[in-house]
Image (cartoon, rainbow, N blue to C red; front, side, top):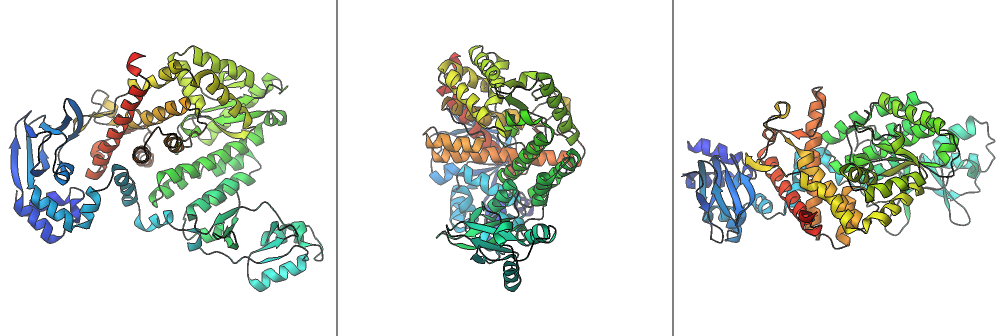
Length: 613
């Protein structure tokens, strides 16, 4: 290769695009081309390494004794960590004829200390790399959304006046102070709010006397945020409660202003609030259906504008909950609504479903409900068909409220749970996993809490059951292999040279964490929160917990990115990705993520003694 070709090759490998001209020239002048035969040892374990290798052709395997830890292929490097530590913890073998550029250790270390970008990258933890990659891949301008604070937005000044003021006096203050809202304080110190829309809808349209006390049109139960809270969290609060404004306090708990939805418009180009409001105000099923069709647009917009996947999933989860709650209220017989709990399960129950896959729901009915079962079944069938019409596909496993198996009274569900635990066959274990992730979206939440407590009572204390519950992870392999470092599906012509990122990564994390949480009787459903709670209980170290959360988010981001691309092409969404569609850094981080998943899997195998189950 010419010097120019060498430079081009080096700069295509992350993070060496950050080399300056002098450093790049020094790299190009000092690299040599080296050839290795198949099964040749390039670098031995417990030695002092001398070179950094850039792979031009072939595949290199990293091993610790006989355990394969990783594989490296074309356009990848190995092993910078050994050079930095001046000690090779592992051995590196070729598994086919391999050609590399070799760069002397001295050049690499010298450049590392002179280039802050390189130094920062190579001294980062895996979790930091994963997190920074998500940031770097997004729109830099809109990434500021994630760090913007409430105080960075336009906050209207808070005018607090006496609650005994008349409507006329209050309106005069609003005009004089040029604010859209007014806060009132009574003799107990409770704060009320009056908005410009209150004057229109409650005073003008109802022809109230201007001499009436303004407190009559005010609202209480205000929602507060701190000025140092992230602006995105304020958006989540507004979406959750279906409100247009929040009251802002400082660290001394003093009211300093009011943040409204309009003030967020410069930070968000999506119509999250308006869709949330449409759902809340919908009076018919058709109005609700129209609102639901905006979800995909919101997801695409947030993803394109730099919003991290964990925030997207939280927002969409809030909108989905609102949608299902409103639909349930519109369709359910009154007696059923007052004596039941509608739950979503699986990824939706964990708050991790972003793009719609299928329905996963159940209906828990209180034992005191006297409503005729045929009336209930008529409603549940209507509910399922309405969701299908909204764009929520039927569950292939028929895990829906329209299936009598998932529509039962509390006592019947307890009998079901008892049979799941005591007859631990694959179907019962799967049903336990699905149900454990259940989250209430409408009705009496105490019903699902009661059933989970029963699940903990009959199952979580049994080592045999916990081991059987966790054992399903042994049926799935992490796809690290010999083809470009990944095990790809070559038999399935539809997914040739692709890997299933759900089976090989996402599911293994989800179910491993779920198994540990069931053992520890944890109620939380979302995977990240579960990891945090397990860490507090001493199950994971902080660094391991961060690696797991970041790996889970990275794998989920890759799946979302892939499926959004398929959606644009009118292709069927699935869990397959092609590693060849990833850049070098993404491939590197995917390998890192799979290593973390592998380590978690081994931890579970040892903890639950799965080899003996």
